[in-house]
Image (cartoon, rainbow, N blue to C red):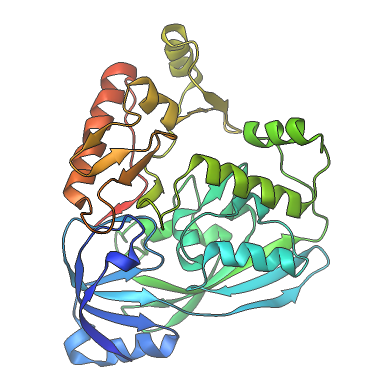
Length: 350
């Protein structure tokens, strides 16, 4: 175990917010976690898990012990009649995993290309894009209980997946509670990729690509290329403009609520969901309130996609977490006052 003190976190969060970790340990195996638990000075400290830093907003220096997850590894773990089971270390970049699976002939993750962050964070958020969610391709994961030091595995049902949610985002309500927030650290994740692959194309942007190219039966690599192009056209590269991707979740409403909004705003972008609810496009709601391109201090709303908040100050004069959250709260107020919809942020505020 290598303990580092006063570590700058600006390189480790995609927003590019300047902050420091009072203490940081790089986790490359379960042995590093066991060493933390065995160290009397570290074992009792509060902890903050850090992966790719693509889904956090730092509002100040981090006093908790930062556990930066860097577990490596990519392999075909096993296979069944129907699936290839791919295992990835929690520190592997998500996009690196997606590209690796296609390079090795294992399709199924291509719709989620170019999502920022690491593999270990993907089950926490139940990430998804362009009609596919992680839970659709998930097999199981390995994690360590940081209270007991025990290793354990979870299947999809045990992870409690729902829209951008999982058991890892909720604290336990007691000894039998299911919440694992602040308790479990994910080490490896396994994915079940279908041998009988079929394209997932039921998304407007992909339908447009088919119409533009005349390709109506794309293979997985073609979908991967389309998704990468779509995301690059819509979303800023964190290496160039600091951001945390989509800042707000798309809200779900009842059909009755949607009908009421449509009566007032006929152009509102909405999608029917399998459970009967209606998902509204948060970016459209924000844009309709006039926020696209606006700034608060050094935090701004991306001019090409209102769902993305950005660091206007760059690395030299970065926005603060306070500026980001002031802007976010102003947007939430505007959307609620106009539509009666409460937007919920996606990133974790630290």
